[in-house]
Length: 292
Image 1: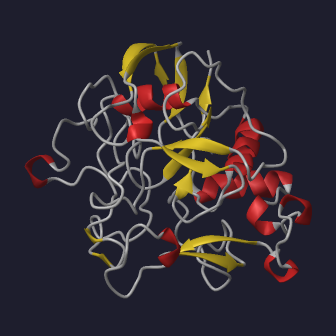
Image 2: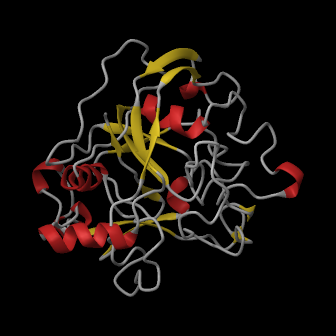
């Protein structure tokens, strides 16, 4: 039931970029040891097997601890998660609150709220899992979450180009990843017909045989996010705290089906984004790795 692993020899590579967003800098040489990485993100079926075996409840299924949210209205402290809602038309892209809505009852089984379901989506990446949830699955699987450097090494597939497949986002007009097609956040024409997540492996693999490293869902890493690469900082131990800290943010990698060039040109290996440890959304998932 666990995802097959692809063994990587490790090595040195140039991590980061100075061509796009400031948090990707500085570009620097990093060496990673040999490791194995799951071929695709963890799916709904796989996460469901973990839950069935352990009885685990995700953070989105548990009422928030009032002590972590001083001053919050008690009526707001109910189980739920963030859900993407397309707008009716063009909006100011500086205000993400126009397309993200806190939704009571949203969780991995019901990604868009209590009336939604993952029925028929067993091979789609699981979403609505926060950092703690991803770490709990990794421990159960006897695996761990990757560091940001490991993740980027795997995503590049040995390439030094902007995208793992070259310098063009759509070489020869071919769509290489599940990203937003149309005008964000109100018109999505679909990526190969998919609006939202797509079944893992719907788009071409990279040269290491890994799928969905770019697009589909953002993926958690064990690296604490900072405004730029913190060179020389020790890698955080896996796999996350038992209770997430809303004041701490992890580095996400890979971009998602919501990434559009006019708003989020982050469907590239070097791209990174912060997310608080307790956040669960409709566009964040994860995959695991194993040390030799």
